[in-house]
Length: 479
Image 1 (cartoon, rainbow, N blue to C red):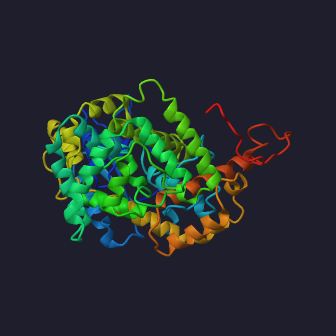
Image 2 (image 1 turned 90 degrees about the horizontal axis):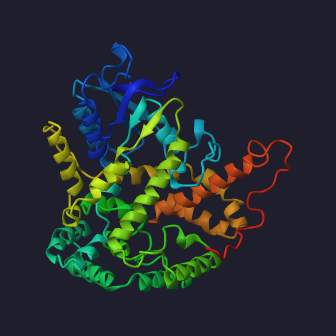
Image 3 (image 1 turned 60 degrees about the vertical axis):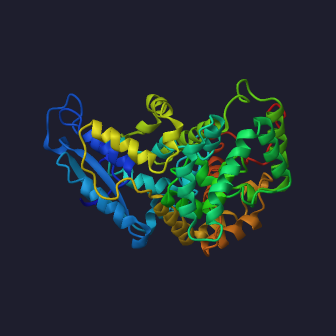
């Protein structure tokens, strides 16, 4: 590969793909490069030397420590890019592309206004720099983890089907991820009891229990801080350690919190008591009057469906926040047909460690690709966690200024002092759920962008400017 960056003339014509060194992006790049004809050439355009190969883009974060796994991912990407049908471009970036960085190095509050807030807002600039070096039609492996992996709550589904023997390998992998501690011997029994308890808990009782926890502010114990596990799990040691480190919980604690019908989100610990009480009331109403067919859904199936829906919504926000003009971003793993095909995979297969890599390896073998670099399929969550913590540390001053007089506090959702204290603690290395802080920051940023545009580009210059949340959050009993 060669160093690359954003093009002033827009994305290159043709088809491109991410090549991060992970299994999902590598699979898409190799499959797209194997299309008949010249995949990089736009349909109907005469063959040109500029578009005869698939453009594979690798993002190289220069701020990460070599021990974080970045070097191994880059080496796998370089090995895959030796395919003669790939044209490799490496986009190197430093602190200006870390999470929580704003456009052109400016404040995070400056940027495009998306339809909704979402955690993707804090990493939009990071993705925009990578996408600017891509092609007019760019493929991304976004969503493969959530579509192919089995949510930990699927273990309860296996118990409902009386398939206990399929729990052996997942719980063994968790015991190895826990390390040589005194309680690692008890991990299999602990996880089995939690899965059995979930299998025997009706939907109504599970939701009411979560509502009770919210009223009692029980959101920081073993059930809290597992936001990374709420989007799926590979049941591997690397994946588990990275997710637990990001969420501020241990590997076992993160797994046990996922074995529930629902749980408090990662940002719940910083919400006010009034907000938690209001959410608990709505949860009780949802439990007493469930939607048609909701009570009959199994816990693992419901949690996996909800996690995929959240990820798809966040991807839509990412498309808007990191949009590159004249570029179409594609996420094949979120395509309806791909999701249906992955749902058809047996649950007993999907809960096994390394199942995602095995499925993608079989797909590549069916397309004639058999030679893959060593370490292909290794989980790479730790690099994202390290980047998030480094970005938070480098921008902690701007983030504290952002919550000096936050709109979230005006609405009664948080206390500014509590959030500022949490940001300082996370920047100093304290184990806190980084995904929860990202949700708070992204929501505050979105509200500020909304407020800056009220009365101007949406409603005309003659309209009186008004605060977006001047009167707080209105009561909506209908929900």
